Image 1 (cartoon, rainbow, N blue to C red):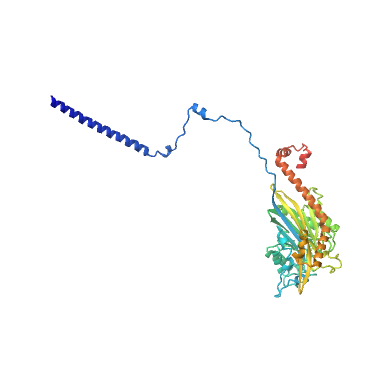
Image 2: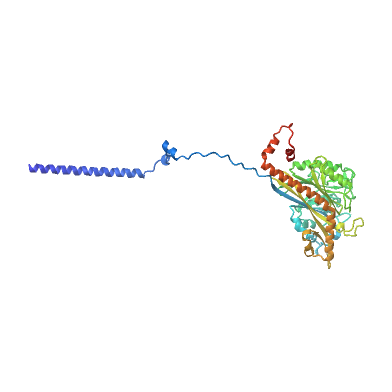
Length: 494
């Protein structure tokens, strides 16, 4: 009996041991599978966590209560404002008498005209666009280098003009044909070859009679005309010399019949506007020499050009300074034109007493006349400012060296003239008298023009401010039926 009991116990122990091993193995397998499952990367489509939707009660507890809706803030538009400016300055006649360019002759036979422009270079270069009247020709060696009666100047003058800061030369005047048709052509070609614009004459009749130049982001239409001594329709003479065949090379008119000027100017105005001109200027050679007041023909012509629509008229030819005025169009009374009837001489040998017909000293005087246009953000362009810097030609002799210097007579630095321009007491006195003469002629007109332009700008700025602050007022005015009369306030603003 005892032996069988021991055998049974042994069997139980073996079975328990086997069972325990199986359980341990199963436990290890389960642990392995769990670890492997954790380490596996889920598919891309299921990698991102899904949003958890809270129970309704939880959502109500965590959602912010809606606040009262506020109306959006209204931002008023910015008032229209100036986005571009263009200042154009014009100097009087470069009347190149032989005594003037002889002082510029070098020992090797070449010419250097730097001394003429030495002191005026700074104010000229400060302009956005600078212009001068070329009262001579570049006829070349085929013609004698001389002054009156048939002007022809060495080519080097053009180099000094460029160096002084000029951008354009007016090539239509009563001496522009002094070296005949070949001189007209050569002058235009030389001026252009130096990077300058020649205005008033062209190579042939197929070229435009005008120029539209972009200055500071504003397009300015410019045209230049001169009176002619005579014309039979097929040929013309500018200075009483041998007539030149009329092939459209020169912009000219006759004092006895200015209709040619008016007809062509009206056509040119349309062409310039079609080419994008936003403002317009007429440069014109007219009047009577040595008269310090314009004549009735100039007045009539200026009024007609104002009626055609020019914004600025700049005159020359009298060799003395003439007045400035503000004209009102008879066609559109809202249109005004600023006119200076003559700029006088920039440089010449017309000294006091040299010409009996000239009033004392006035032929030594000139003006650097400037106008400034402004463009607003709505695209409109206005004339905003006029300026006039008197100039005086100082003829000086230092030992054997003679020079003609154009002096800019800026009143603000008058106490420095002697030092700036190397003037003795007599020269300084002459410079002051020159400024006084010029201001006595143009002062009243300059004040008249600038006072008007200042008021126009103030009204314009006020309107733009009001338009930005009260757009609904002007919007309502624009939607009124045609038969509904606008209020006086709206009409004035519009």
